[in-house]
Length: 429
Ligand SMILES: Nc1nc2c(ncn2[C@@H]2O[C@H](COP(=O)(O)OP(=O)(O)OP(=O)(O)O)[C@@H](O)[C@H]2O)c(=O)[nH]1
Ligand SMILES: [Mg+2]
Image 1: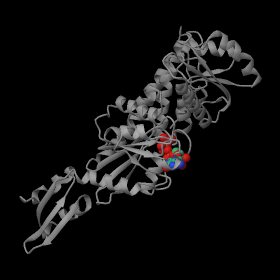
Image 2 (image 1 turned 120 degrees about the vertical axis):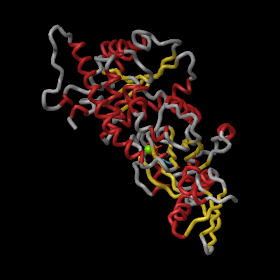
Image 3 (image 1 turned 120 degrees about the horizontal axis):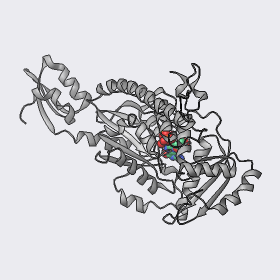
Image 4 (image 1 turned 60 degrees about the vertical axis):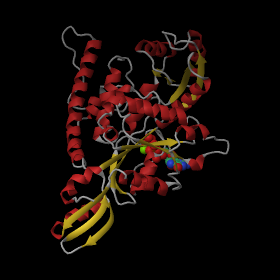
């Protein structure tokens, strides 16, 4: 793949001032928690946070988002602390970005830009990198001044891939044309990768598909590893996982499911990213069951659940049955009160993916859930059709097998999706 798709910024900032804005409709603690998350995002991106500030205002100032007085106040601070970026926990307009950069003489970044930057740094596979490229290009199109996060010209690598100005074309038009052309190329490359993925998915269409969803850092990958014996990267960083991984898991009642670990969601997830990651998220959209993993020890657990549900609505995935999993119960403090959450989600499973608490019960619940899908069946299987019996053992629960002279008489349960493969052996019960 040409270096054209190198999504990493050529010279990302290293010392940042963070700005949160409490608007009329927000609560102060929400603004504070969100700023705390922005700090985590910045740190994940390798940016040191040298200062944090919150301004309360009714509505954003159209010129700077924050007030002019606040900008004046920040000038000496930024200089003294040697900050090279100001990061807003809000979405800045292209004009606000430009004005802030001029006034403070440092890079101005918004929450979306930072999230895109983190994704770009962490994207390893070809598909994830293409998806991030697409999101970045679409974000860059109206914001041509934001060179730090763009696909840089440097990234076009050899072959003189940078833009060449056409007759009568302004720099701006040329840049736009260059970005549009790249969007086209990245889309094409993505389609090719997605076609491959479709083939793989077809092979799985028979199986029960279960997919994790959840806020970033909730513990999805830790639980995935525990259930599959895999070693997907799980760490205390936001967006440790960008690609989905799917593995077979055998449930206690012997049914097999395909379990997928997926990218985590976040509040104010850039819509460019949701669109770009639609293919990766097909694991979610096509699932028979979603396991919504929540870090229940997080002070914002409830808001995080809401943020995940919002993204699911964006993906049209709200009709898929969902099981709530309250993770990290080992991390709960005495003063934490789960009353509200538990009353909202009485069926939630309380677990610790790290310590293994509650896992057996969770597996049993999953197993029972899929057994319920099939009614009790009576079958008569000729000895020459041993394969059908194998299928029953593999995907269903054999309640009783009687080896008679003419055939094997079996009582079993089978998930509905497999019924077809044994239906010709059904006898009335
Ligand atoms: N105390 C505690 N920590 C946990 C538990 N489960 C996971 N963690 C920790 O939480 C952090 C995030 O875990 P991951 O499994 O990477 O979370 P994730 O949901 O996959 O996160 P992303 O891939 O970033 O969306 C890691 O440091 C885990 O060790 C748990 O049950 N208890
Ligand atoms: Mg993960």
